[in-house]
Image (tube, rainbow, N blue to C red):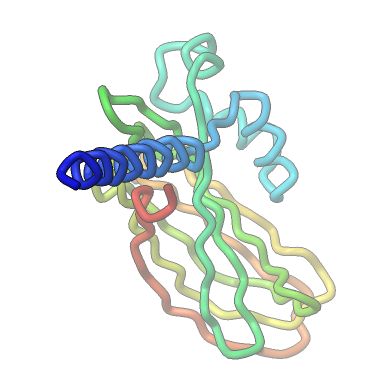
Length: 195
């Protein structure tokens, strides 16, 4: 009887260890999907950032183009809750650094704004500012107005030298028809929560 209890305890401990190892492996698999320079460059262009701005942003604050091309990148997507019907998104691009046991945000590259949510698309006349709070959190603020417009937004990228490490993007709505909603939103998105 004592041998059966010992065997049962050993099996139970083995199962717990196997489950713990499996969970750790799954967590690592779900960790950050890293993007190459070329992948992030293409993604930026597909999300309304010009080639010139994408290249300038990727090369900002690095020694040379080779360093930027050897780096790993990722994105965090944050939803803006404007109202029940309209929730556009922000997409933060950043370089991923690697520590002994974890990944972290090395530097913020830029932010893209997607004005389309389901079948609704509005134009933003306003400002998006974002900056790193620390190696795992990005602070952002969006201030302005949404309009119904026949034209796409015009994006104005401000030189980083004016804002330190922060990213400052102005959007201008043209050919507007009617005011849709005000926006004065700020928040923090966490790389830890994203992973």
